[in-house]
Image 1 (cartoon, one colour):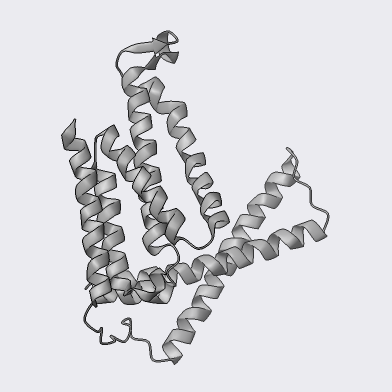
Image 2 (image 1 turned 180 degrees about the vertical axis):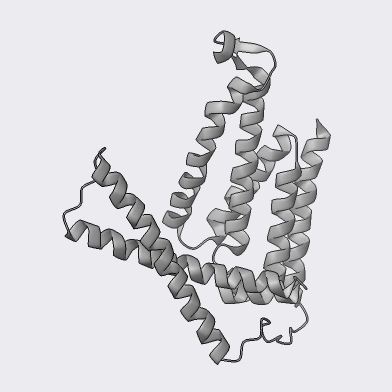
Length: 239
């Protein structure tokens, strides 16, 4: 559905909503943002299983916040004692970070999660983002995929040789060699990619294509995103 919209409109809408969600300091507005983002991502993101898996990964990271922040933020104790006392302010801050983090992630997935990287780069260029930033994004994405391929090949090689990790010196030496080979091979692949770009006449800047004017549907998308952002901001002012 969103593939029919101009990448510039999708990126601008997503950045606006993510920015508002990240800057809000109210539980009410963060909750409103999360509710709207969840509805939008469910309606617009095509693969719900991938969405759920990635959302679970985000919340797995947020568990570290719940394991530390409630015990370290000073305030009114609600449970425990001494250094292990939970504070009301710490719990509220953890809840706020969780709501904001999930909302920002879901807004990104709803607006840009299904966008091909080439369209994303074209949209950034159309929005006058620095060319070096777009180049860094494209090459980083390419190198991450190469890094992942090298990692899987090395892991399969270790399994075929009967390697089983244990808590002994041989395991530590093997893992150290694994990491060293991983970085060396990734570096070699990066040099190959650099030579390939030079042979194709790449000078550090991508060709700038003419972007057509935004259509009516793109303007409607930006308007609805601005309205949602205003609603989220209004929720924080209402309390």
